[in-house]
Length: 232
Image 1: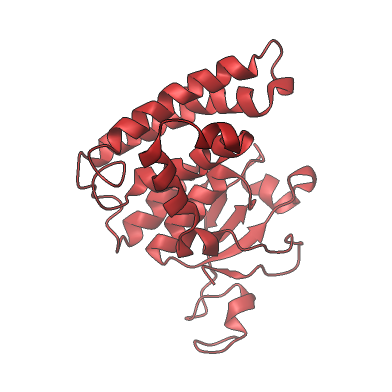
Image 2 (image 1 turned 90 degrees about the vertical axis):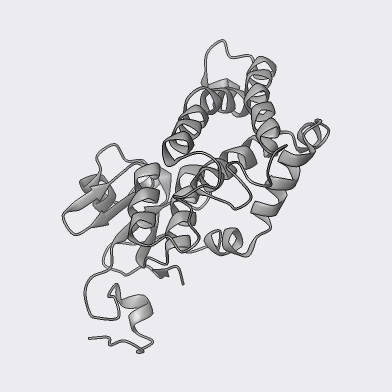
């Protein structure tokens, strides 16, 4: 059995005390999985990372969460299959950067902003990025709808360097992967918009060491093997 300080513990699926690590089923490019990984990294919680190929979902993932989406966290008998709930699970264990304590507003205010992102903005993002998947979708109309939400974020950033004050919080980590995805659909168009604070905020997030760390590529997980410890 791997012991604390033993390099085998990194790939054994065990914590330093020998207890099984929570399992995190993830997909590197999924924005929901990105936000979960960001919060876990910020909390310092340790998981076994199981990178999933979405076209070939492992049976263990489907057994844990039949809906088959990522991220999914399995901690003993507890299964958490919503990204925001995984963020809260991690940060309520340990929150050294005070992501749950925004400088401006409350946790409830942040959750309301995340709900806006995950509702109308995410629907606009999907119609903009994948118009062929939505019958009758108008990509330019969807872009305009999404832009209205981004203008609201630009206005929030007029008063502070982050969405809820001058230190990053849960809302920033939860929204950044989706704003990044929207920006990447047509980068030249996004960069040409009059959103200098939002553009700077996004650039700071995606160039940061924590974001780069959670975007490291890992081979797909296979049944009968252990994924890497995350954060590494």
